[in-house]
Length: 97
Image (cartoon, rainbow, N blue to C red; front, side):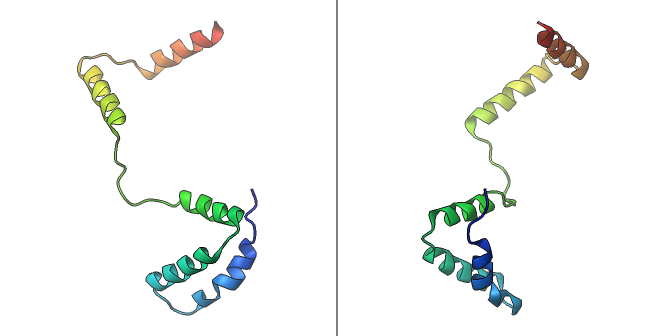
């Protein structure tokens, strides 16, 4: 999906970046400009861009994930594991059916 008006946004909105400014000031400028945008497609494009930003916070497992990990650890402790080769063989036999 092309990002509508991104070039216009860059030309009109980011020209002040060439001067030295703090990240805090830059965030304030962007927040003010984004608040003024009424184009839903453009806002969705910005959201999509920010959805893919790296997150430095550690990932927090939900209860379901914690339960699955606990179950897997118990299976390993009890010796209920399969080698990679065994799993590949099983999958190949399923695919032949």
